[in-house]
Image (cartoon, rainbow, N blue to C red; front, side, top):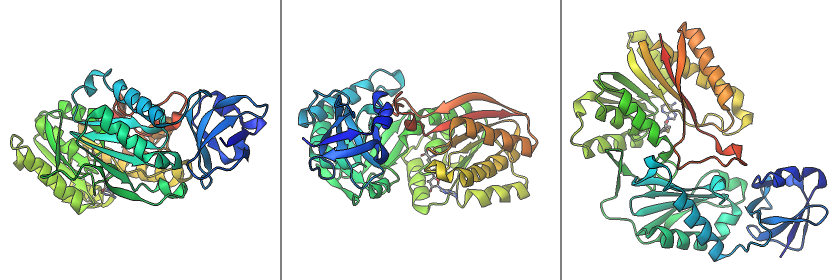
Length: 396
Ligand code: SAH
């Protein structure tokens, strides 16, 4: 097996069980390895540290499959890892019985570059690293065996594949497209999922608990849901008894799906829902001019800062929408505000929101810190896994 010898000054992170080996930490490669091949990882003085997947084109030159030098990376390895990851989901009560569930959360579940989301009896897999790509068959077989699902769709079209030198790959890799589409129940709300064309694997499962929380807060309230995508937050607000819910997204297809989702829930008061295709930045300014206000405002924008390099521009965008949010909030109102940017840490995000409240002239307090659901765990050795952070802020 080819071997990676680590640079003597750059061995710390692997001792801390961080799964990434950056180009600068690899002193040299002994033997020949192709993209995605399994390599043995050794310290400068020859101590074996485990096995990794080789990625010659990426700045992340290798990703650790295992920190056990004696563990073999083969079909049985993936079966074990997939089974462990799925079994982990049984622990948290809010995850039990969920039809929409993230089964594998990549590095944080010990499978770098592997994402698997379950929607009923369909599993969507997204492979973003050379190693994951190489072991596609083993991973898909393991998912089918472990979950007993009827079909698997591959959605390996994330931009990050480019950095690994991989082309996009999509298609059914087990079974066929289900007739009549895919519908899940999420805490009492029915949602259609477009696994082939929707965002990510079709849906934002990470916000599941937060959508439920919004439902619990919404009785008798007017709600503005910004960046609504297919209406997940909006439908929970309606189910929770909101007096009216205005939802904004710039994507027409997302709004079409949102309207269709509302129609799937005949028990919900459709006359209380309004959908607006617009740029949130402009729409909120318009509302400000019109003097429109709301009791609860949700801000769940897309990733403004994919990495720390974009942090400054992103910070301005977060500041802008949060400032507008505070200005449109009724006295005593709640702002549910998020950042899913890896490049913006929790501390910085809180500072931005505090600055926005200050500029809006509103006294406000955090009543709850919000995060992704438990099926999106954060490996303690892998703090990069913490991307979604949110604040529930109550303003005077
Ligand atoms: N809250 C959603 C997920 C939001 S994803 C849920 O729980 O499912 C972010 C959404 O923001 C996407 O649907 C995207 O179309 C939309 N979007 C991106 N930029 C926008 C903008 N400037 N104005 C309005 N919507 C925008």
